[in-house]
Length: 127
Image (cartoon, rainbow, N blue to C red; front, top):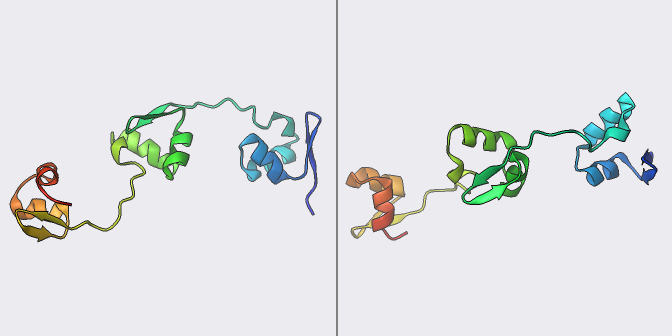
């Protein structure tokens, strides 16, 4: 059985309901209840840093991570390494390509075999 939680005169049926309503984790709600600070839920000042990934502007790393189905640390590392263009792309098995009538296992394999850059291979091949 869950205990209702009352915040600023509004009663929520459970800690989970509070977490959903304020966009925080249930563990955060639990901590605030233990500390007697539940009235402060959802009022934290955040250091949201905007980030742009492949032309899409996000108000924060957190929102970008949610929308791209990655963690915030992935976004942070991508910013640090200047590799935002690849964040959230589904890197799966290599796709076979045909270049000059020869089929290669992947863009990389075609690049190595022909001595062309991957960029050049992309332009010249059929994927």
